[in-house]
Image 1 (tube, rainbow, N blue to C red):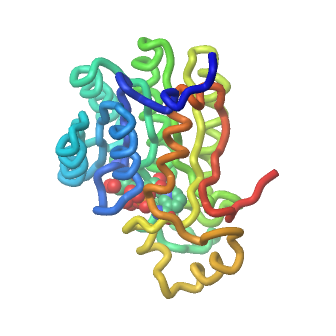
Image 2: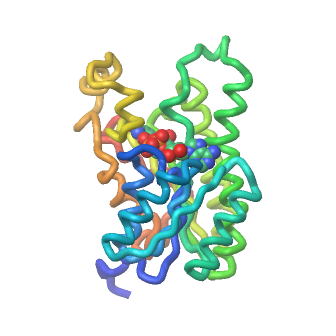
Length: 261
Ligand SMILES: NC(=O)c1ccc[n+]([C@@H]2O[C@H](COP(=O)([O-])OP(=O)(O)OC[C@H]3O[C@@H](n4cnc5c(N)ncnc54)[C@H](O)[C@@H]3O)[C@@H](O)[C@H]2O)c1
């Protein structure tokens, strides 16, 4: 079949985006709006119910279809309820974007001194939470004959620095494992590894006057920072028919920060 730009469309598809309702300017919000703009019905899921409603309302105000769901991704029953809402509201699940994570709220403790509660909490949300959402959504994807999983990792995992980087590198391991075990079900699993993004959380983590931003400006091949919307094209590729043959990959969207063969 000849390629057509229509293969990027998501009409009739149902997408869940976790972590889409937290701060005002977030990557999850950009993802939810981008998927809706491509035609998908979107479950806007976040532990912060009010923020999820704001983003879902924004989508419906623009003529899209969206429902807000409060979810705690570390709780299997809560993740199953999120999937049940997708099924009752829109008929099933085709796309799961595991975007929720702890990031800006994490400190920079040296690994030798890291509090084990912080270690467990981080891995529980950033890694186990993604697995829990996959386990909830995979039966619904199988029922539809296939699906797309996109895990949000980070340039901070290459190499891993701190608990955050470790959690995001482990998420890459989850991604390749999911790809291998779900490929014959028609379910792809990929990861997006953004560089420093100027979401509210990203700006909190890397302030304009920080030494780390100066370092990025000197070392990143192109532009050191990107906006949340600049990740949406990569997401649509991985979620649509245009990317149907891509699985198990990590797509770096970072101006050339992490350069890998
Ligand atoms: N901003 C950056 O520079 C950057 C760079 C690389 C990767 N990332 C990743 O992109 C994603 C989004 O980042 P962001 O900058 O929009 O940050 P953000 O803090 O605005 O988004 C994270 C969201 O996850 C939600 N969340 C946290 N724990 C949850 C739980 N248990 N259940 C459900 N939701 C929960 C939060 O409420 C929040 O809305 C994260 O995975 C982050 O690690 C961000």
